Length: 142
Image 1: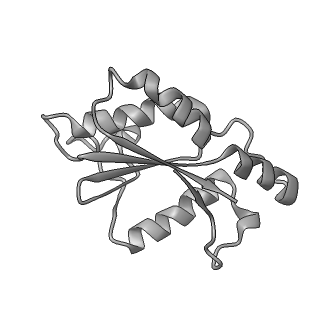
Image 2: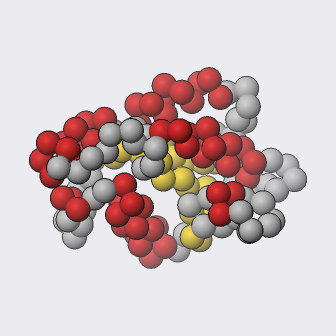
Image 3: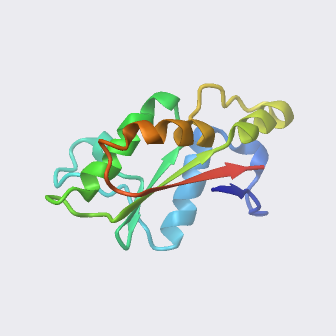
C-alpha cells in the first residue's frame, strides 16, 4: 500500500535516509511504540533489534541500503517464532522509487541504492517459504 507524505511540520527537503529514520522515531515513540526492542532476549546485538513494537505489531523502517532487506524480513520471522512469540504481524515501511526521484531532483538528496517499496514488494514472495508471519508493506510517496 502506498501512502502519501503530508505532515506539514516536517521539512521534506532535509529528509535523507538517516534523518527520515529520526523523524519516524520521534513520531512512533510519541504514539507509544517501544523503540528498538530486542528480537532475542539478549540485547547485546544491535542488529537483532526491531525498530518499533506495540501490541504485537513489529515495525521496521527500510530506508538504508537495499542489502538489508533479507535481514529485516528475518527479524519479523524470528520475532514471531513460537519460542519468542513477540509479534503477530510485521509492518515494513519504506519510500517509493518516485520519492527517491523527487528527493534527488528537487532537493538534491541522494537516495540511490536505498531500499524501495517496489523492491520489497518484488522480493517478498521469494521469502514466503522462510517467513510465515504476515508482513504489511507501506510505501511513502510524494
